[in-house]
Image (cartoon, rainbow, N blue to C red; front, side, top):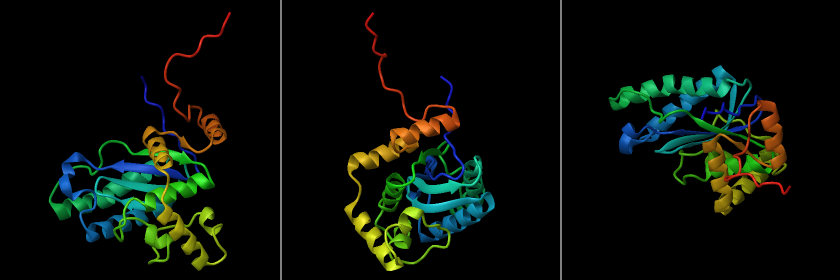
Length: 224
């Protein structure tokens, strides 16, 4: 069965997952704070060059997750390639290794504006409590990260930075229901749309391919 093309829509947010290559071992994609700083610097350069806005990140040992909006359809692919060149090379030199950091192609879901987009941000920011690993500090009153561009959904949480940061802290403390978090992750891994049925239908029409997995099993027969 032929692999479906990615669902990529310029101007829409996408939830990206880049898995770590098994050859990295226990060190992971970012072994320490120095690696995280280098990764974010490379990501900022790549995002500016490829015209991609970054809204949230998680630099986990086993994978890198982003919430990002490209201005052009191929912007995310170019972003990942540029990040591999910039950060991958620096990582390999520092750790004395060769080869790619990533286990295959990146996965992504196009994300519906509104609650779903805010939920993806909450998911990414809630993946680690360790300072600097995610963008949670930027969103909840910690040090600001120049790489990041705030979503309209964040501005809707309050009239002042203090109100918005307090609202984000509350949302992060609450966490997402496991079924919601798993649904968002599976949409990204499967290359589907995250959001309502109406949003998925609009994405499918725009991209000329299914935006949700087909139901399993044979279709029901129609009585004659």
